[in-house]
Length: 215
Ligand code: URA
Image (cartoon, rainbow, N blue to C red; front, side, top):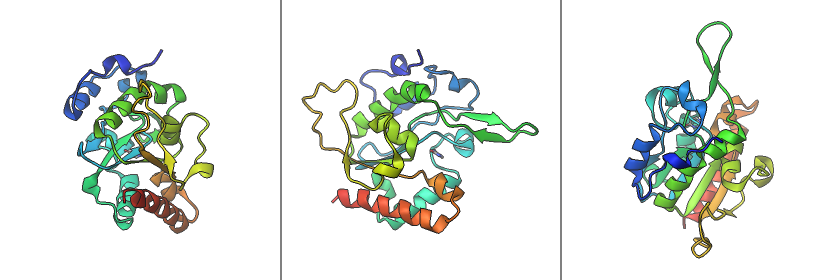
């Protein structure tokens, strides 16, 4: 089965995790991607933002949310009054999945499968354990499913102040860590929407719920 678990080192800090993730072979996505795009930000961040997977630009540059969707996200983060220095940004899946346009070289984003999302989840769990944020923001359906399970529906659960369920391996004793979770649409959905302004305002209003949960 696909599983990043055996690649995740015990007792690693974020830098050691990122270094190990660069060599992850937990699923086949590493074969076509340029590089692993690990999370980025301060270990002391109070908020973790979780996207789907790196896009074309992220795959080339090796950092999350540096492309067009990232521009939308950063504008909304700023407008919601969230200090970007207080955030850690990552993705549910750490490699770019794509197909090539029939003619030409353009790489077209392909949604990761549930298998790939669960294979990659040990990296996300390790990041969340280390950063131990107060609030997690799930950006879109893939992140929502990675954090809340396959029955997650962004249309039904977005914008509500939820609780982050215990992460795998939690023995229950510390599962009441009280970490909150807010789900919202993926910022790339803003770029695809017929009414971009309305979609952006929706993203912003959900991020404000997350900002408020920081107190
Ligand atoms: N979309 C994502 O979900 N993550 C990125 O890092 C970039 C685009």
